[in-house]
Length: 617
Image (cartoon, rainbow, N blue to C red):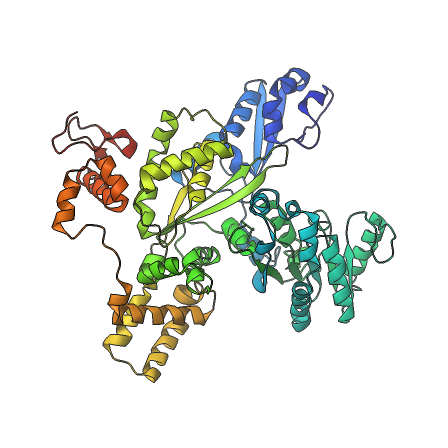
């Protein structure tokens, strides 16, 4: 039962097993109760897949309704991410599953035991920009309905692009001995056919499997039997490369896969997991010791939230409470994968000059995030199956205080707007409430290096669904990344070209965790940042920033006559600084703000008003 399958109204008393989405059962709970639960009141066993989502309000409501309707109730949760990283969310999971984790084995253990193969992730940039061919509406659709939503015309253009397809085939040809038996996940039927022709022309034994459609070359209908024969040939290594369109995502036994080529992007973490999962069967399970996951990256200018396979693997494999070297490296890699926006901007020739100029004025450490809000939730659109949305909100020096205030104010904000009982917010509501949050907490915030209204919307939606604030992962070692210190050392010691090169090479080679992981093993980015830091030190006049406070006495005296809301309109950056200074003055040792007059305490700024020098109430 789900939005696109059957409905709860058709449940029969004689049914032994119901497989359903939670939303369908919640919406049709009366039918479920009358047609099934009422007749089976002795015992119901509930199994929840992706059980880390069960802390959501809608899940808890369903569980409670079923539990209260039967005399014997048992529940089992299944998930690839059995731990949550925030203390409060762990508490919620404990309430939903009072027996806690009854069995657990992590990915790293499965790899060590040889049940899973060790994945090696590679990215190949195609250099092709497809965003220019899309309308704003199509770009928006891509973030909700995946690649199929952009229309057959444009999808066909991408699928049949000779340059893109040759990039995919040549990658295999240059590393044939390494990649061996390879499954290619193609964009669509056109893409599968075009790639197959190129592989064959290059002398590679290849074929493709797709749903029951006409073979465009012969006009013959391809049957499921034909697909099975091709899969059998691939298993027997009569075929080296098997290209497919969503046929091999699940349920197909192909143990000898050495490599996965991802020639299609997706916003679905479920689909991505299924695709990379085809290559992760280890030696003990009849597979391979290592697996190569190769992604082909087109230029979408960061406009579409495609799932990154390596990031997905890290998220499901990492325990943020650990502090060992491997965990730190994984967290750092997670930041690097997020494509910290300003690094790309500084090397992009077509970027807005004003934005580039503002970013170049910042010290490197200010462009390195202080931490990340990491969370995920299920998004439902119309009658489509829910899509899991993975979010990482990078937080920098310039917006840390604003985000802290926003997160602390969420309970008050939801109470004030009567949202505490809501299960989800629609797009219009998200837009309205995000703008309110922006006005209240982010007005006057310096927008560089990065700030996005969409991040506020995502946090609002997550809180609505989970009744829970997202976890903040602090990057405690970020001071190690202070490139300005390297630049200062070069200048202070007046190092010549040879000595300078030796110093830089030594730092790069001896600090893999601190540098190579972050810069994605691209030394050019590292060198660019050092040269920029040297320019800031040697020519400070070219990189001067506008101060927060006015320097002219005349301007300050005119500001003193303004009310706060008037000052906000005239100079929002100064007004925010001034307001924040007032709150700092009235913050106790435990981080609570308190009223000057009554002593009332709260961590939410929404509970207070900055009043006159002599408080009126």
